[in-house]
Length: 497
Ligand code: BES
Ligand code: MN
Ligand code: ZN
Image 1 (cartoon, rainbow, N blue to C red):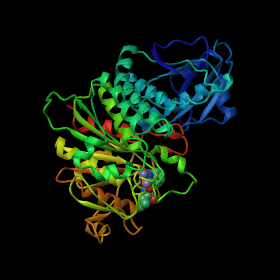
Image 2: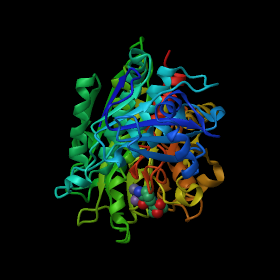
Image 3: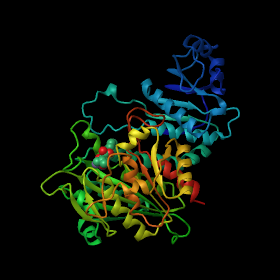
Image 4: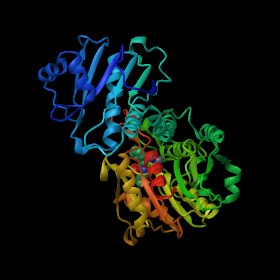
């Protein structure tokens, strides 16, 4: 589906989508259609009991007096509630309806909304972003899908007066959408396709966008003393990798970067502490944190963000085998601290321990944020509505939570403290890798904190939000890329000038 912008004109084919405010307040295009069809929309709204409430839909087939196949009215809700997020959701809903219509052409009328602060071009761009994000589909492995079941929609046109301004406003948003798509694709690929070696190789695609990419293999990591990360991958036939990506977009090329670190467990079987069979296939997306780092770097480079960012992805496969790490093993991390591995399924923190340590010491970032599908316990606490936020810095928390709120990727902060830290005391090493089963997401965060020095740091536990179990406003069921838009917005709001 191609997204294009054009001047308002009555389309001669396909479907036309119009917005209607709550209380059946028709915007300009809907009024025009009523005029041309002798009040067909009004009649439709009566019959369909359509009031214009958020996401309400009513569709008019073969509208009299028009050449179109159909007109679809979608509720915008109350004018006073309309903001960027709402417009994205509206664009997404429009794309969903257009795809379901079976038509090849769809046009969405971008009418001015009374009282809306956003200009028409900005509105068009937001709707386009929603449509683009929602229409993504991972269909690479369907080989016998019938033509009838494939989406037929070829073009999705946003009709608005200032075409040039709308196109311009969409450029940076489209770059973010490209980043989201990369993340979703990496998340969706099965673990026989995306493993540490192939995922590391995929980072090279970003080089042409101006991202500097370095890939460390096991020999290099061994020399650096990254035994916590290496221990997780030692049961796998695939070589563990650490990918470092750098985007230097700030005017001051020397300025210290913001660092983003991602957990990239390309498959988490649990290792010797093996997981139950039911649902284990989900652990292909245990690399979502790392995938977010990839997508974010793509977004930043794509929109030439004026900020310096370093992204680090720790890529390992957690497998049971004759060479796998055993429960009870003690490993020495790059920081020098020793870890007793009580449970090989608490592997993400072992990967991040070395990735975080390496990142802060090599790059001296002004802030460091990690993303990880770290604990099942975060689902118990927050479900899939919020990702968990843990931090040593209130200001950083505020900035992250506010960015998350703006883009619909909300965060909820959980406490940390000494009492929790005590729970990971080991009898034979500096720490153990699990607590006693209570407050599992917090003890995991406490573990990470031991590998962070004096840098403002935040940890996002995205185990509950990385994968959408159902359709969301701008996310089709499946890989959600949760974090890409949030971090893009966080960087834009606080560090770009
Ligand atoms: N990758 C899992 C966490 C997870 C669970 C992600 C559900 C996505 C959905 C993580 O490595 C893990 O296995 N955590 C264990 C920790 C436990 C052994 C202390 C868990 O949450 O059960
Ligand atoms: Mn695990
Ligand atoms: Zn895991």
